[in-house]
Amino acid sequence: MGSPCNVSGSASQLFFQNKSCAEYRALSIIAESLAHPQRTLLSAFVQHAVDREIASQFFLDEVSGQDTVAVSEFLADWICLLKKVRPVVCTDLKETLRQNIWQRDGGRCCVSKAEKEKQFDGGLLLAYVLSPSFFCDSDMVNNERLSSIFAAFIGESQLQNLRSLMGQDSLSPDRDQSDRLVLLSTRIFEHFRNGRLSLKRSSSVAAGDSARFFVESRNFIPSIHVDTFHFITLENNAVGLASLPNTQLLEMHHRCAEALAWLEVLEYMKRNPNTLHRPSSREFANAAMKTPANKSFWNLWYLQAIPDAFRYVWVQTPAFFRAFAYKRLARISNRLYGRTGSDRIYRLPFNLYLRVASSDWAPKHQAEAQSLRLIEKYTHVPAPRAIDAIQYSDSSFLLMTGIPGEIIGRMISTMTDEQLHSVARDLKKYIAEMRQIPNNTGSRFQICNALGGGILDWRIGESQRRELRFQDETQFNEYLTEDLPLDEDARKLASKSHGVKHDIVFTHGDLNLRNILVDGNGKISGIVDWECAGWYPEYWEYTKAHFSARYSIRWTADVIDQDFLGYRDELRVEDMLSSMAPSW
Image (cartoon, rainbow, N blue to C red; front, side):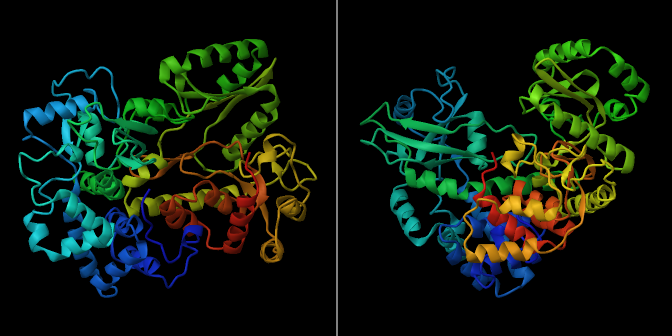
């Protein structure tokens, strides 16, 4: 997702480290000197190095403190180096060796293993993991800085191994270069070249004829679909004629892959300045509870096209007929629009969305519908409108409108700092509005859902199975620490946070990167998925946002931490308690 510009002010547990260590100081200087994505690209040098402290100290020595010009020059050299380690297509291989490698991989892409690629017809490419001219390149020879950066990143030991592997005869046409080459489809090569796919060895080479790898994928540009694999086995079907790709080269590529992927983002954003990319129509169909922001017809349909009169008439229709219609529509939804990513959410015609669950989920659906009514009545928060919530036979249904926008989790990698700051401002305003919603449930339970019933919260696993609601914050705190193996220090930390009396306010409860939608200008166009909403202590929105996106540092540091300037003790306690309590 990127590296934050608010490193020094972040409350993320990933930055609870020693503030005097070289890595923290290096990341802070980078954050103060560069904007996204340049900042994220250079941070990858520190965060993905073999030894992060060595790489960090090297960077600090090179930039002499906080010299912005020196940081920019270091970034330029880092980009130059990355362009040189990108895999390249092999075009000058002897035909005999080419056929041996083809036989080695069975005439198939070694990653996708696509059966249809049976002959060498241009659909497959031979690619060098690392160009054979890498160490002979004039820049690498004449620019000592590039070699030093590379050594600091991959480590001196790995550097010497690579030099030995490449050797002086790297460019000789008579040398067997099969261990440096991979056979890839055109599509997979583009992923591999740009760091979208990389191979990490998961077991040692057995008998020299097979090796198992974990395939790690990363996708930062929404318009690009990256194939998903998990594990692959490279098998040598031409033992004695060709060698498997060298694991040291693949490990080097894997370590550089994150930076290569961010380099592609940098190049993309330079070509498309101030433009927030919109996914394809197929990607829209696969996103839950949203509609294409670039189709004005659907924008106009949002809210206004489902008038109150229609809602009133529809809910007067007999329940058995509505349930029958919902079941039939859910059955054909995937054929019409594709999967939404959830087995319980279906996209319907006229920009409607349907939740379907077993009958015991009916109270949760009713509570979510009431949450949407409260948002509609008391705030200007752009959210779905509840149309219908019924239980019939063994099923429960919740029908609601869709809203325009694109999931911010898909867009954040290509969003500028200014766009993300705009999102933070919008979100802060909407949270303030939500907190003004009065609790008129008439329930004696302060912490409850929108109907006064039991909460639903993915942080609290039992809430999915039991009716959990609490008379006050004290009772809630007792439940959170109940049966946990807390030592004396942990109990002191918890009591410090739980000893503070908080206001009980209306809370979304799941402000993660999937539930915030943005328009083409990077403004919030919608907030979806209100099934966890209810009344909670005022800090809960903040700690839950960290809980659901704790590894998305740019989101938590540059948006969530900026919208909630307090609650740091509460966050530390929640990080501790949630790590001890199962969320299922």
